[in-house]
Image (tube, rainbow, N blue to C red):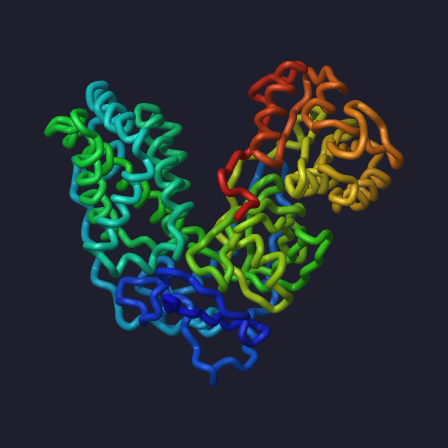
Length: 506
């Protein structure tokens, strides 16, 4: 039998258990690596409780409609040599079972300049260059799996010190890389959309601790991957176009990261203060961040657990901003979901998580006055619940809100009692529970439960012309729901959703 590396993770409960993680090195972090989970010996398995700062002195309050409060920002790592790095004075190293880096990283190499090295400082790509970039990408689509695997093999073979910046299992990360390349190529000649995408990517790379020097390395490995897999679409002219496009994109990401660093930490630390199991596979997790955390109802955050370093998953906020600063998430454990299973079955009060900044565009201007229609499937009800709370605080008088809350079976409607309690206090709110199993399509069960698939049930209650609509839940449900709402009279520009590939999964 082949031997496997056994990883013991320290948590609030002592040894959280042994998990075999292929490919996860047990060596000390390199000078360029982020801190990883240490490998404790048997004598180190005494219970360890992470030290969590007291509640922020100035917690975030509910934002005014259409506005996000500026954070009371205090850098977590004032002496750290990088944007997202443990270093002298980092009181969180012990909580994560990781020591300080072995030494300072080398100074970041400058990105090879193209013009002045910033978007807008050079001429935009020509139509011919855009054509070459997209043609090369089209050649990669049929062999995307092999191409992305080859890219990361080159990256880690030539720069093994970079391996610690990535999760142990790379399948999700490889898929995300190719989706990102597709998005950027689609927007390469649409400056406004590209700037928004690069801003998000820049913030994400801050969260992962990516220094500027890595962009140069990635460029070379990407160029060699294209040369191998783009076939006849790759020549000297195509290479020049791809390199110019890449440098424009990389410069935009670096600029966005630098701008974000002026007003926000790369990530927050948060202590779990409440963990409530609602069903066998669903938990409601309440987190206290170490400093003020600005967000809006309808947004989501990326979470990382100490049990699976470098693996981040997105979860929507299930409550509007509160005076006490607490954050609430609904998590469903999914098959083979590393983060979701850890949060549902392993996490407990006292454990410490990392949180990325709030993101997402499924926010609502409650002063606009249009009636609101909400579709929430499964744990997709989390942002719906937050939006209802926000509407109660800031909604325009006379504005009606209708919530359709769906699940497969009645026992899976874990948030129904809470929504009905809100409806009892707010006559403008109507809650309609829907189950897809247990009765005929279009029927009505005891307790006011409607039966059928959620999008089709909503369609039967239409038309919905003039409404503003939000949808959250499984991607297939959201896509069907958008089609139903369009046919029911909702204008396309009034339909909001966030189809994030790994939102509330994994």
